[in-house]
Image 1 (cartoon, rainbow, N blue to C red):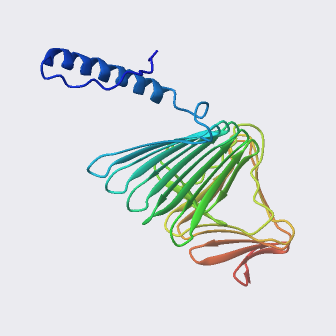
Image 2: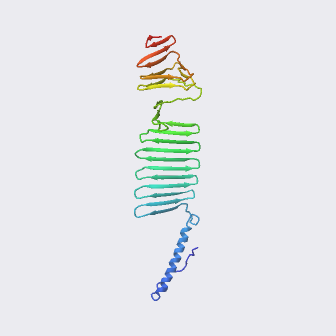
Image 3: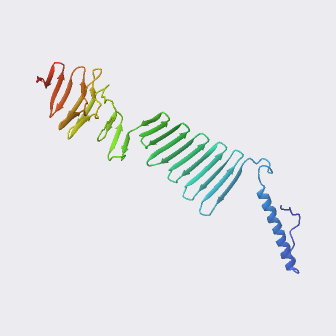
Length: 283
């Protein structure tokens, strides 16, 4: 522990220079130890009215670091001469970090015992945010014009806002879900057990103007194509249309009014009283 010196400053003695130098050395050593002790113990307990401690360092190039400490938390901040900065705020409740460039680009991360929130902003591209709790994950991506997409995940499932695209899974290609429109390549509906394939409760259209449409069931199940509640089913192909049920299977096509099939630009109608090609009854 340092001892507070009460010695007076040694006087210069031209007749005894070595003794004078030794006295000055001892005196400065004592002052150094006393100053170190004071600085190490300088806090709000021994300085009356001191609620905040501030430390700051700056070099000749303009780089700066700061530490601010209170009983409730600690704030550190580092900034360079170009204006880039980072800051960390720590309290008993959580941590907040912030990194900002001189151009205004910004990222923040806030952590508490119950949540985690991340935010990234770019002055030319927009904003992305992620919020995580024990029972929910929310993400949002937004451009500078206000256009955005979002995703919310809970134990009940996923809630999307925006267009969804699935790419490069087990097969090549992609499928896009955009509102009530689904754009895809091959659509396969398969059943390995006894069951049925239903198209119902709304207008159903399958079109392929350059190739073939195949709707089929497995070896034993039946294939049902049924219109309910006055809705329409339209299956159209300019090249080839194949409806196939496997061995011991059946194809059922049912409609309240009629069934319409089109091939080569010609419409065929299956009505209760017969089969028509256009308006002409052929069977």
